[in-house]
Image (cartoon, rainbow, N blue to C red; front, side, top):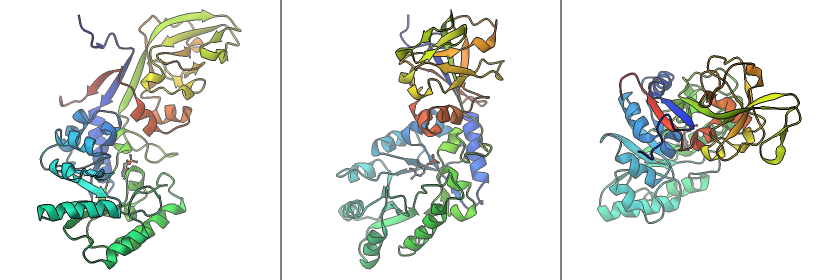
Length: 377
Ligand SMILES: *Cc1c(COP(=O)(O)O)cnc(C)c1O
């Protein structure tokens, strides 16, 4: 007997298409000029998809530059990635952790004068030049050196002594809205600030920025979401291949009379005799409560019929109105698609009033995870 959920026992199956991730990497690489490097954002365990499985696929596709958010993620990735992989830690070294970051052969993204001073001190201790990325705040006011910080660095010739900047980067706030004036404004600010620093490679674009055009590509792009199938061009057809399929099994179905309530708070009351299927996943699995009354599922083979999620989503289950399926038998264990070929993850996100990023990173750990790949990786 095993306590590990098997494919049969799990309430939901999460299928992750590794070939699609590799294809998406190539699509992004082909969207930029040959001299531009295509890095990968692999923070949050590859947006929840599993760095241990995904990173080797990206490496096989030619990726050598990886961005994580934290030191801990970087240490974990160092154990997965090949020796020649460069791993950049977006948050930089936490206070007092510079030596640990260096020991793990990670490269910090330095976001403040304090982080620069600490990294410089470490370089002095080791009497060697240490690689680093410098992040500039070009208008998002999140991370990075502002205009005043850059002026201080530019005035003090020793401020970067012992630090060898390998990249100067910034991040766009509105890249998913190509017409937004902030894009051009941030690019101009980035130009102005980086001109005051020692010349090195530059990077501005993540997934959506890549599709703003060559002016935003510089020397390195750092997409994440697009690799994992999210649409980097909202409102336009998705140029990426879908990566995730989420199927939930039904626990039971019931016939209810008009006037019958469904779920917590009795928030849904059937206005006709209805058939309800209770599916085996809920908000503990990353299916947000906001999906109640707004999201859909489909039965594979009958994808043209969108079946509404009714009532409130519970912790471990949700109710689907399957009346529109008519007499179609739905025995216990029947699998419905919540995310699939005809239901993009971005649609589920929209139904939850959020973005695909949040749905992806919230996908739970009770699903049976299946990694699909043609070459056996
Ligand atoms: C997360 C992140 C990325 C990747 O962004 P996507 O929109 O997922 O492509 C790139 N750069 C920075 C600084 C990030 O925080």
